[in-house]
Image 1 (cartoon, rainbow, N blue to C red):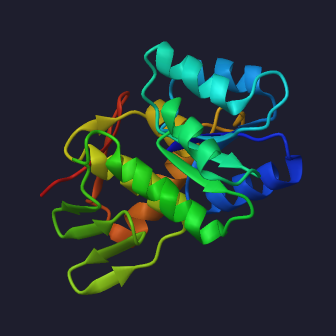
Image 2 (image 1 turned 120 degrees about the vertical axis):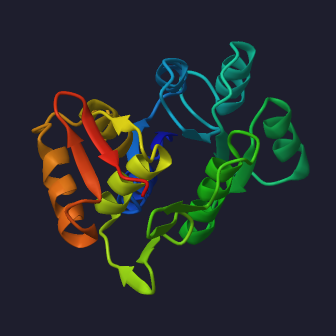
Length: 220
């Protein structure tokens, strides 16, 4: 899942990005409202974490502009303000949730995951079952039968992308797009490294390479 953080407090933005990256998300960060609107308008994000007090354009205007343009990406607003009026204004402009600083990082992650699960009308299943694998996307756990398989955050993120389209081919570019971020300019073969690691942990037959097209998580 790809997240955009629009936050002008650079220390907070870096801290949030580091934590969310460790959770397995691909995270981009901008520090200006106008740049945030531009990046969010390009699409491709699964959720936007949006501060209200921003240079260039405040979070209320960024949110209302996105909604007016028809963008339905979930938006979690952050603010140092407090009071019902601010919360109501944020929600009236189209935000999906609201968090007042200072906040618990654990609560932020819980809100992010809740919004991501809610996306698409609440139809997304928090637990994916693919053959013998049980993939709990909320708890970030994978079981094969009674055995729990320990995965790193990035390994889980790659597996999750394959599991969401189990039985279908997922290209290397699609995995890079959703598991890494726009700024990644390293070796695209990093995907092969993670697929290889997953095969060692899940079984060689779990993930099939479709030459020239991508990878498929076998559903049987």
